[in-house]
Image: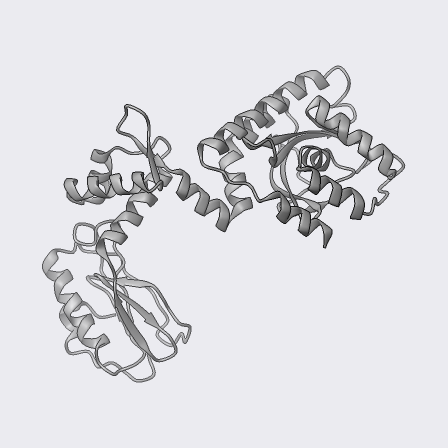
Length: 365
């Protein structure tokens, strides 16, 4: 390691990377030290010497927070990219160091969005300014800009900023299943506590049901996992998803899908299945009466978008002694109520479902 003060006498080898840290021992860094390190790093990166690793690791504002040490194997040949060095972004690609200036206002905007995204109740202008140490006037301009562009939103007649619909849209487009399950987890845990049953969340993907979340009561072992794929025709989740899907999705699945028999209770007649889907839509939830696994019953309700199509479905799963005629009304009420709450949450966060034609095309492949 080399601090900014010692960097001037450091020889950059041709084959080994060098780690540059401003105050690597963790002492508070001031503006003078930061600027000195900036100059030293700039001098090295503008030289023809290859193999330079530079690292500037602050906690919050680099000029007002403690700079943390960085550990790196000096003989590690793997490239390191997107490392901020006091305003310089460096990228090492097999012996070549490229430097591109970072835009400070863009960095500040990203830091603001990150802070607000992890704050449970949002943040005010004063709180953002205090957390990041930026000037109040420029912070206010950034907040207004992010609000006007939809990346943040402000509650009516309040000064609290929350993640906006465009930020949510980017997250769910990049990581749709993960984003959806995380946004719904609190509700899924609540449903599990109400029913004392295993709760699942799933989406329809490529003609199958894909589990994206599961919650189990204490001391109840989970036999399912995230990413597990199930047949739609013999699961309550699948019936709820297909029954409320667009007509072209249902038509594609019912025409091209093979109805595998899992046991004697599985519906393998397309006429019976079509009638079951119609009944599912009319009553508002799907039923798996030991059709997938003998001894296991499930109830599932769709999580609907404003247009009436399912973004996902949630279910409660139990034994044939847990889910009986006497307990079904109470379970259905908790299930459908939770699905409605999640639907409202997704609408508030700007959820945009996959176009129906995409799923129909995928189902037909």
